[in-house]
Image 1 (tube, rainbow, N blue to C red):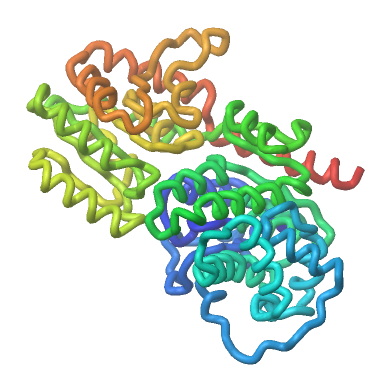
Image 2 (cartoon, rainbow, N blue to C red):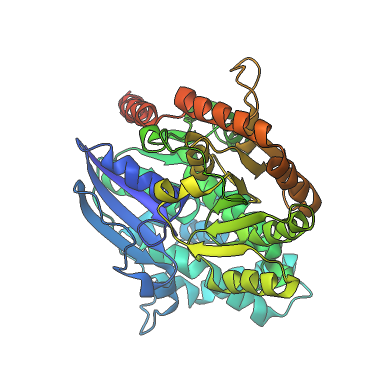
Amino acid sequence: MRICVILEGCYPYVTGGVSTWIHQYMKAMPQHEFVIWALGADSSQKGKYKYELPDNVVEIKEVFLNDALKKSGRVRKYKFSDEEIKTLHDLIDCSDPDWERLFSMYADNRIDPLSFLMSKDFLDILTTICEEEYTYTAFSDFFHTIRSMFLPVLYILHTEIPKADIYHSIATGYSGILARLGGYKYHVPYMITEHGIYTREREEEIIRAKWVLPAFKKFWVRFFYMLSAGAYNKAVMITSLYGGARRIQIDMGCDPDKCVYIGNGIHYERFKDIPPKEPNGYIDIGAVLRIAPIKDVKTMIYAFAGVKERVTNARLFIAGPEDDKQYAKECYDLVERLGVEDITFMGSIDVVKRMVEFDFTVLSSISEGMPLSVLESFASGRPCVTTDVGNCRELLFKSAEDDDLGSAGFCVPPMDVQELSNALVNMCIQTKKRYKMGIVARKRVAKYFLHEEMISKYLKVYDEVFRRWQG
């Protein structure tokens, strides 16, 4: 089988949880061929892979959104039909457009992406929406915002589509629309796997974003909800990592019969023999994560500053790539401004080799799915302090009806400096409890989160997708 996996803003350009997951996923299915349809933000990333592609990756198609903004040249005029105008109006208004008609217009190369955005028809639609919703907003701001918002969408619809037997998007958003586009082009099924809830994550980013004018934040949120709805609509199956995420997908309009959850799995044997840390006079805390706003490293830094006031021999090691250079600089500057000692930024590490140096780990994210870093910490016998996001609480405690192993760490509200600091202190000073939590953590992974079991479930999902598609 030829499987096209569609990835947005991660593999193979960026390391991290989702990238590691898909890399190991493809390697675990040598019987199948994979095509990577990689969607990136900036064409400067082209060909700069952080991973050596598995042998069964037979093709990689790279698409970069910033290339859309570079388009220029003469635009051929096109007379849109009434149905096409309605579809384009629904698209610009973010109100459930007819995606198949858009595919017919753009994917079949009948219309250049710029032909609409430089037409009187676009101006008329924009004027109508502006008069209805943005009466007190400068039209020039509205024009440039909407044009920059929709040019990348029309651009990706116009891109070359790699051929496959099934399209598997590892998110909704732009990549989910590409999955639907591939299914449309070659008359094959597509499915979606969400590690986090894409729309909710984009919403959180937009609320905090400085690059979005306040007047247009709601419109940007509406835009991403529209993309996700379009991706969900025709998918044969939609998987998530835990039951709570499945419920959110259903609340957002997914057909419950399409939605299943498959938990993450890790290569337990790589971690299971890592011994406890040798006593060295310090309590060493590991944070294995991408340095990015969604991981909320700043809250971790503030919390650790509070830890140092009470546990003077505590040390924090932040291990992971700088996904966001500006945010990373802000984190370094924060450490310097606070004058907090014993925080080390390690860069990317070999987790298996370096986990032996940590007493326990911490994750301070404001959004997660089922984080691999927590499972790897558990498999190493290291308990974890996490924020109460995604599936983290269930990983730490499970429910009584699932198992009676006990607690594998502490869980605190996101963005709560004091609660995170208190939990870190408790983990530092309660040596015996920390050791027992590490035993629970290792047993929990061995019982529920094995990589081979996860792969087996996805192979069955592929079979089910084809069964439903054909029948």
